[in-house]
Length: 490
Image (cartoon, rainbow, N blue to C red; front, side, top):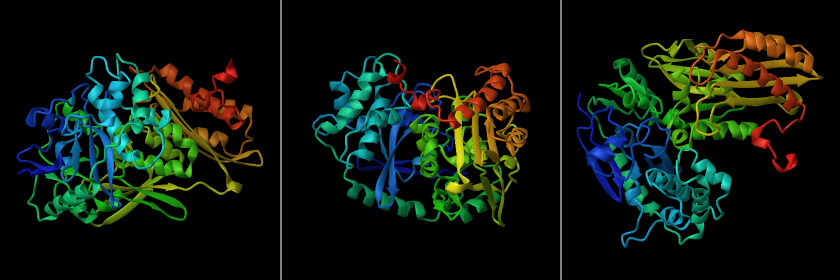
């Protein structure tokens, strides 16, 4: 099959690239085809951030800017978007963009290898906050730079640069002109297309028809995992089916009793919606990889991937989420934990796709939910879980009336802790009950030993986290890094 011509906007001009294989990464195109070597090749897995670029596309009449990792993003996925690399920021007269000038003034670079990625993350933040009229806080800067690693400069001057940008003379993107240009590209994309090797349907009907016709095509979304199959495992895909442009799957819908999140909604936006209903999830959401990964990766992709260490699934299981699968004949719905049949295996038929994730809303104050999600990893930011545990209890009159627990990193799939739920339900919520349930939780799964943790460690941590959950339910906060007050301990 032939490949479509990739068209995107860079420096105000349309860039058109033909004959790009469907599995070629954006970083390969930038460095090898276009010669823009300011974008660096580091880890090749979306971990270090040296390859960060910024994409923009229309959203609700404005431009939405997203910093993403180009090393694992497929080149065809940027068709119809605007793209910036570090070479594109300086003005025609050579004056630097505030993201660059602030790095210079704050001495934010030493060896310089990681600097282009930091600058692009700063640029993405600058564009999304420039018209909000407020100074960038240190926590906002940390969030924006969570996907960028530096081994020699240290983060203090880089964070200071992030906060200084707003104090420099403003530089604006001509959004009106760029939106008009993007509309013109969209007209080209909407024209009738032949059976390209890289298919990017615009509606659910088109997606399910393509899936039925090409059941062997590799389904992709943000490629935050599939991209590693290309860069690390050297796999090749003759045919790719991209779900990220399907209109129905890009929506978040609020219904009376549940939140419906389209499978193509980015992790950043999906977690924002979940946090809006449950603010206590903010810290956990911000620890799901770095921002560039959350800007590319999708909730549906994380769920369908089925990795036993995927962080969203334990949370969704504890929330009682269900998934809706679709094909050209209709849809079916099932509890999320029933999606999986084994390690990275699921019940999806050859012609089915994951369409939506449905998450029940919190109960009323009379039916209050106490919930926590714990991620245990070697590094606080931008790391993979050794253990992930999500717990949600409803307690009435001192009795546990409902228990819902999801766990990751302890079995071949994300799992529901049904035995521990049974050990809690109907019991007084007391230290004795918590200790007994912790023992059940330690024995419920048979985790493995790997590079992240031993089987003994994982089992011990599971029970410890349930005891920590008990302590937090009693009002203790100094055991949680998210609320830890150093001054209070002096």
